[in-house]
Amino acid sequence: MFNNILEYSQEKLSFLHKNSLFLQNIDKFILPLILFTFISSMFSSSDFIGFIGLTVIFFTFIKILICPNKKIDFKTFEIFLLLYFLVVIVSLFGSTLFALSLKGFFKTFVYLGFYFSVSQHLKDNQKHIPIILGTIACCITFEALIGIFQSTLHLEQISTWQDTSNLNPEDVLSRVYGTLKPLNPNLYGGYLVCGLPIVIGSAFYFASKKMIKVALTGAVASFAVCYSIFQTGCRGAYLSMMLVFALAFLISAKFFWKEYKKIYILIISFATLLFVTALTFVNSLRLRFLSIFAMRSDSSNSFRFNVYQSSLDMFKDNWLLGIGVGNKNFREIYGLYMKTGFDALSAYNIYLETAVESGIFALIAFLAFLAKLLFDGFKYIFKSKNTAGIIITASCITAICSALFHGLVDTVYFRPQLQFLFWTFVAVIGSVINSEQPD
Image (cartoon, rainbow, N blue to C red; front, side):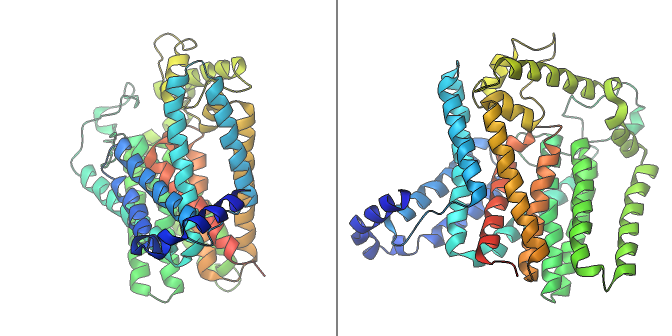
């Protein structure tokens, strides 16, 4: 049905395409806008980033409406994503705070619309994948360098969620926060760890192309990103970084285990030793990491446990359609459930947040989308013979997994800086695995 409508529209508006240089070269305008979305994420407000993303959506809409032979094809995981979006729409109209929920819904529309736009762009321009991922890697590296610079300044604490009551002043980690708006170490840590696999992947990608100097630059950049992640003091990012390296080693075994087994084990041992050494000899870092396991003894942990309990109560009372999407909507309703003195902006768990905002069926659809996406991606990795495609897909899957894992203990995933990265990675995976059937 969609394609019939598009075909009719393209036929009736064909004269516009034939007589417009802009429409004939519209992809040359869409690509810079996509790249600028990532660049602006480093220093701009959420509204401005969203405006750039909305511009990408607008140009894509014009493209498929007017340019000939443009069609919409749904992959299996996209069907689950569409179901999720439809449930969110139903949840919107069932919300008691429609106006606030509408704002949250509009953000969701922009994020998913951006995914659709990047996916449509890559359908005709798969050669742009290295450009897009390269831009993301450069942005992540630049932010990491900012973090390294900030770590030398011993910045004053801007986040109130670091419990320093049981620490000596010299053991308090000076948490860096980069340039992302709003300034927040957890957002910064989530951003870096989501982009880390792309930086690591760039080293592997250029090594596979025999561009050794560029590959070494990517390797150095990866160390810089890891250092900055440590300096954020973001414990969720620490755990996600461990997952990133675990997946990187497991996937890279496909290439190195048979012929380079000893070297491979040596690299893994060195990386593990480096991590353990950092936690052992840097007292502030060790104490920050160990606070993960302090449970109620750490005020930040205790705060989250209280939020989880209140959010579960919210879900029990609104399990079918939720309260409506959006953090402002969440905060209004949360006031009825919160423990005294424990206000919260979110559920601090993206899966619980999804269930609370849009209900059980939205959560099921979202999880089904993720399961099918990751299944298709890993299937491609282990069956394909295309080295470049494997590296690109593996990098994006690892990045997605890191964001999802971090999402167990925080909701920075819903910030535009991470959302635009996340959905771009989904679009890249879909483009790669759709373009080649693994042998």
